[in-house]
Length: 114
Image (cartoon, rainbow, N blue to C red; front, side):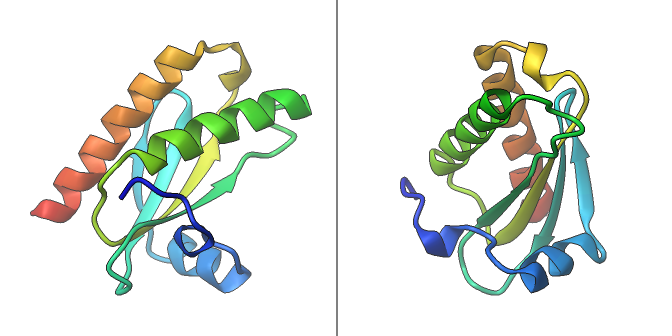
């Protein structure tokens, strides 16, 4: 799927709570990716990038933009995903973040393929 419509986002607290309870975890140097299967037939994503981890608004916006674009280009199984930022992500270059997200998507796909 090469789109990022409103249906592909986690919008409500109940959607986030569904992922946080019994979540599977994939960790990259910049992010913690929590995921859980859904019955919708397509993947959805939610972002939880706190001011405590990423101090400046423009840095949070850059991280969100990179994550959304990387997610949009993937063909993922039917899962709900919540991405949490880790410390010092603002210091990492865009291409490294994108590469590590690609690795996380590959791990996630392999997890649900088995």
